[in-house]
Image (cartoon, rainbow, N blue to C red):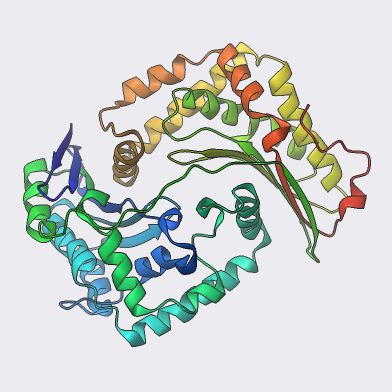
Length: 420
């Protein structure tokens, strides 16, 4: 049973009661991510996320960790381009402690200067770690190119230059501007009573101001770009993508199924062709990266320098094939069964239930989409809709291709790097 309450200060409290389980997954979701940051403090949302675990007026950083560990729980957080989340998984009877802890982090974090400098060094090491991982960094490279000049294209973690200069006062000002009631959702799934959750949240977060400072949100414009960068790496990394759909688009289930068919699992076309038939890659997959007003449909493959031209050509051919030829009914049905099975299996996790509930609220403004309704929307997708998605999305005008490794443009003389 899903219930929703809005507090007087605009905080939304959502819960799904799952009788019979022993746990509760609880998250404070903030409608704030890297796309809401001014350019000069890019990366501040991620920095703030780190600092909220470094101590409050009531708890030291060690006490925060010990309090959760002592009851076998899990505490963590993450920042994305559109939201930040702080979450606890804990035994159901410990929910009051979890709400109090998360509220303390949000309202009373100290932002001690010594802790800021320590955590700054940690984040700089995190940036260096990503730079040292080509398979990870090429996705940032792709995103920067794909949404060039837009806040969605900036790395969530920030850059060394900007992270090195962010001040304590900037963090406090940013918190006051963005961590306000209208931007907060408290979401829980598990063995709980909604009224108890509302009372606890009201007690610890009821004094949070309702409004702060708005950031202008403008949808990005995507243009074609092909970039081949020579880098002395063992593998060559390929990231190819086109403009996708926003999170709330009516045809989103069509693109979910198209992704499953193309590169979403081990029986997908790209996995079978590139890995099983050609033996050219260990890792090859596709995914749909969607936001509130935009999206990207992306294919990744890691291969040898010698194999990169053929892998790139194969990816382009598979995109064109989806556009030209209707998928087989059996293939579509298999993709539907995969999506429905994955969705149902994921609902055995309270973490996934909590996340699904939060994202439905944040992106769709509708928490009442049941599993049966989701399955019905999957079943309603037709062969014609999948082909329509391919025809609409797989166009040269938004094609972005990033290749990094022991290659340069002269290695691709016989390949037409266009979608026609």
